[in-house]
Amino acid sequence: MRTFLFFLLLLCFSCKAPQEKKTDVGMLTQQVIGNYEASLPCEDCVSIEYQLELEPDSSLIEHITYLGLPNGNYEVHGTWHAGADSVL
Image (cartoon, rainbow, N blue to C red):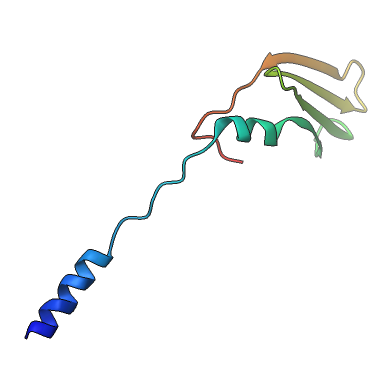
């Protein structure tokens, strides 16, 4: 009986919740800085060329080009930030 209680107590104390990972926002920010490009399908045009530039000063520039359409170039300027709950 003592052996059973010993193993029961051992089992109870050996179980614990997993530790939560803490996100280093500075490290996350350094990992996402750069240029990203994609070519997307489009019904009204040949394709959509998309480029995103994430800068170290938290600014961003989006270049969107609708190939095959007149005046299909757009540029958007803005800011970005990475939070502790951000997912890569």
